Image (cartoon, rainbow, N blue to C red; front, side):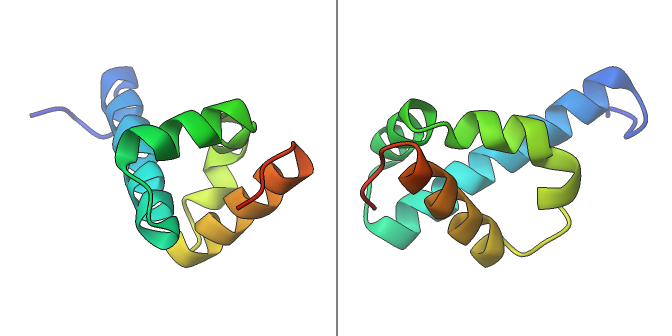
Amino acid sequence: MLAKGTVIGKTKDRIEYFVACVTEFADAFGLDYQKSFDYLDRHCGIDFLMKCYEAEHTVSFADTVNDLQRVCRRNGGRL
């Protein structure tokens, strides 16, 4: 079991959070998971999650999906 305070534990937490966000985004817009990741990656959503993890992981997934949608639209996305 990984301790939460370790670098590996923190990295694992972030990866699990990013996967959950991609999944929630996919479900919200009827995409498969790969297309969801590709869309978020192409339109800076993944970068946003990486840069804003500390704040975003404290809000609901619904709020994060809305934030991702806004970021992606500002970067050429159409969802």
